[in-house]
Amino acid sequence: MPSPLFKTKSIASILKEENGELKKSLGATSLILLGIGAIIGAGIFSLTGIAAAENAGPAVTISFMIAGLGCAFAGLCYAEFASMLPIAGSAYTYSYATLGEFIAWIIGWDLILEYAVGAATVAISWSRYLSKLLEKLGVENIPYQWMMSPFETIKINGAEVHGIVNIPAIFITCLMSLVLIRGMSGSAKLNSVIVALKITVVIAFIVLGWSYMDPANHADYIPANTGAFEHFGWTGVMTGAAVVFFSFIGFDAVSTAAQEAKNPQRDMPIGILGSLIICTILYVLFSYVMTGLENYQLFKGEAAPVALAIAATPYAFFQELIIIAILAGYTSVIMVLLMGQSRVFFSMSKDGLVPAIFSEVHPKYQTPWKSNILFAVLVSLFAGLVPVSVVGEMTSIGTLFAFVLVCVGVLVLRKKQPDAPRAFRTPWVPFVPIMGIIICFYLMYALPFDTWVRLIVWMAIGIAIYFLYSRHHSKINKEQQL
Image (cartoon, rainbow, N blue to C red; front, top):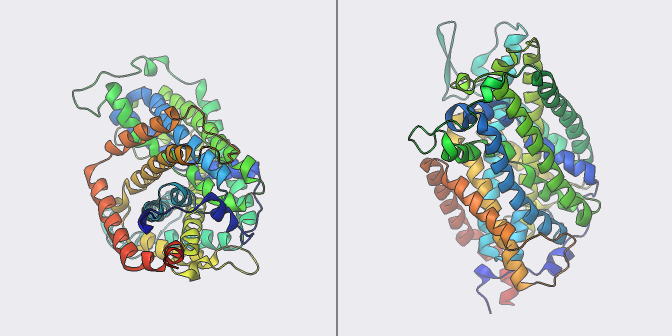
């Protein structure tokens, strides 16, 4: 008999647990829009300039292709699992079916970190862009001290302003949590409106800017390496891929909504891969136009590179629309990350690894409302009191780690259960999952060392909780002891 640490849940038992607790309201189109809502945030508007100026030059377009390719390999693996196991929980549930309870706990704990840090980071940035919008609208006496954490200070007209608490970040976190509690149908409708707005702005930038590109800006497409690994040349392009990877974070959150899909076996692969393909195409075109409008070197240290690029066209008024699109993009990203987090916690609670209260479903809205409330409070505290610099690249490394385990899971399940029904099969196995593992590991390697330290500390805390609480309350462990 296998150790309870690595005992897996059968696919049949996992599917049997799906008893209609969560309302099925999402079709293929809603899932694609959910994915686009999670993927297209402010990353496209800010990281493009950073990666171009510091790492890849105009070849940042290739960096986006490489990052998108890594996500595509992982996405194909996600699609197979999502069609086999249309259950809330995403990579956590997939790991439970293939790698065992302990690895499932590790990945679940990792996903909690990914979604919590991601939602808090985006909420803090949402607050900052709100202040920029108020400034452009001519609002006077903006209370900056109520838009920053107590550990942050800024200078306004020569005077130093100390933060007290970031009220807008708390507000948007709580608002999106309330939208989620009311149900996925309403959440999906709101997300659809936001997605329409930000895609319109992205396409408008591409179309309007295309005629004003200067071919000279693309002449030195892959600048020569400066002698440092990450600065230009092909190594710079690869490092740029790790930088812009943050722009793709969120497509995996689609898989956490599998239990709320109307026809998950058909619609989940469409939602995951469709949203990823659309966003990759938009990212490549967007970065190509941006680096064509201005020389990539001018983006160095520029907080708003898109605004700088727009200044090279007659459409300077577009700057305000970009800020509005960023705010809209951030809003949908926050909502989808909070949704993903609550669904993972819901699944962990049903398995007994965290208290049962968090798998209780609202009698009217059929949503895991207590999980939503828990994370509304925790993420709000984090967003309101912690500076954004602390969270850094934690979201990226957590996501990449999840992608690696999902790719490994496909290899394991193809070996252990080759004849299990699969509505969607990952093509070219083992090539696709192995390439997903290699690319995601490389992107993890390209992240700063302190990011690895924070991940290790978080995992150490999670392992302690597992051995002190979770394994003693695990349903699968109790069943084995009977």
